[in-house]
Length: 294
Picture (cartoon, rainbow, N blue to C red):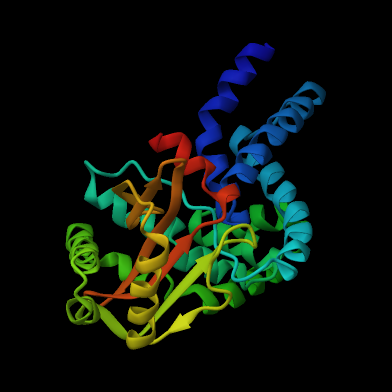
């Protein structure tokens, strides 16, 4: 019976990891949560049967994430420089529509918007708006009344309602913008690069205090262009390989030096131009990408 339950849980695991990742913004943590959830889910079924395996597992994952979010928020208050989510390589090359859906689902724009929410708001929004869980079940999972979780989800919705709008464009078109950006960068053509940026573009990098990175977001087309070519003069001399990938459902790229992955960049778009660049350099956040690409 235990082996049969293990098979049932394995069928649920990908969705549970995905839910935990959206809750936490950290893929390694999400995998750990899913494993902890399996142990608790199995123990619960040892004591009594459940009407809905998926609902039980989802509730356990949500509560584990809420516990971890409280300590994570304390850690992020003392984090060195901007905090960005842990990037994930998306297997969407053969399915552009899947890429668009995934971008709405776990894009950096959405994950950063979720980061501004209180933990219970985040959970209520993701359970109801992302997973279509009825409010009655959300209330049970969060230990709150149904009117209370409705208000939590409504407040969250106001904060994240525009976070995925860029991804509704053709993913192939967005990838072409990414490719043109890289060509202008490699060809030392700041004028061409600036044409691909919105006026209020934002560049955010996350080194976590472990590697060099901008300690605050850089805003504006000219400022970002100057920063990028300054980085090229200093940080790109050791680059030996660039791989174009889909990261969190959006066009991105991974740069390698002789030791392995140097950094990961993903983009946000508005009206066919790049409106935000997110560069993750913290080595601790590059493990999932390394496992997929190396």
